[in-house]
Image 1 (cartoon, each protein chain N blue to C red):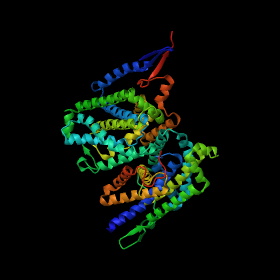
Image 2 (image 1 turned 180 degrees about the vertical axis):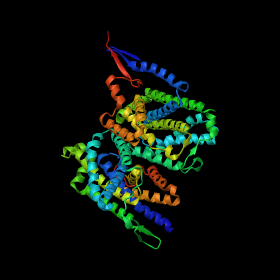
Image 3 (image 1 turned 30 degrees about the vertical axis):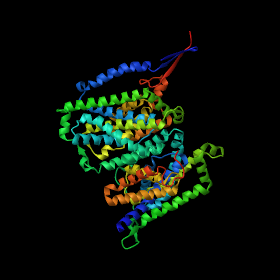
Image 4 (image 1 turned 90 degrees about the vertical axis):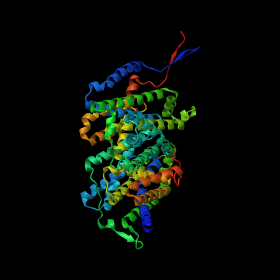
Length: 342
Length: 290
């Protein structure tokens, strides 16, 4: 878009050199990852699947907290719901496991409406704890459903597992590719959303709610839409997670750690950017491999790092990098370039 | 019939403990507009500090409060000035995420030091002493003491807020920290004192919790949720409302447990969600939360 005036020419720039170079590198990386069933061993593929779903969860929480300002510590409600919907659909309906993932997402979006009706009555910090109460209600509620295993949990029936693929390596490949597809879809949708008109509204809300309202953004409606969309995504990811685990119990499904991990990842990586959760996820897994043996100390370290980052550099690691070198691989902002008349 | 009366009565007494959990949370929110996600872990931390004092010196849990209260109060003051004050501002995210991070750190430190074993503060035969009201109805002496203590403390806190110069500083800073500063009040110091006061209540609540039930490093978050539910059900800005909220929660849990043991906690959460749906500002609101 170029606008010419007497003073000169204005143009709106939406891509950067880094983003064009990054796009090429990204496509190469995706092709490489998509070929993993042909080059990676079983353990590597399992690790990659875990990285994919944690990254997808982190992108969802970042959209919710970093852009819409809805800091939820109860997203495990939707992770667990997704897991249980996968099991319910696979056991009681002829829908295959792969199709259960988007279907679970739709169920999550529907369920999020009455939940939003309740938790949107709580403002700011109280919203956070309210979402946690809802997650506890889901946990205790699903523990009462005996046909889904009650408090002790249930395994995915062998017939359902066989349906995915006949051989174990075939199943691993299918689950891997589904996980890769889910994380790509999530990032693509978030990127597309943030580049759109709605993204502009969300960025405005992120920076100042009063200012965005005065510019005609319907804050409440924008937040509600994001809440529902994030519920959709998180529930679908939950279905994927428990497809890889093949067993579900209320304590595992509605574990607060789904949210804790993701919050640490987003805060350390850089909240309110698409790159931040990616960096955070990579750091989380890079540190986890050598530090996992220290168990609780690893969590203490992560918690302290998140606290220090929030106090000293609230924009996170990616925020510092982007500021220092003006680097953006997912440019969602619009820049105005001004050329004076010759 | 009499069993139901009994359930409700026990629920009211449990509500006193929940009101104690909640009053600290309400003070912290009332003065600094900070929702302290670490609150439940502070309660558990206080119970563990009491355990260390009891095992180290051989005194009873109640006497241990002489040490636990100042330890928790100083801890609160230092934490507020050193870590939490810098997070306060128009942005809601930093205080929320910092207290959330601290919550994980405290839980895992307690786990590392004390292991996941269940602990208990023992007060001997006193624990099971009860008064018979009628032939079929009895109340435990200890739950009754907790309830009376909660009422007395809420009364005392109200008096501090309404009648002392410290209370005036709390209210002034809560209303408008900038103007309060112009009047010579150091808001950072006042916030530190408010956190110290809240942690005095947390210390007492922690010891009561430790005597009444088993505790381990993981039980903090559910105490936070109970405290939060009591505050919201009662209505923000009203400590007596908080007591009422605690009682409603305790009664709902006891009635739920009577129907089916699996419903105990669920019934409390559902009571909270029902109140939230019908009266989003709580039952006895005095201030709005925005």
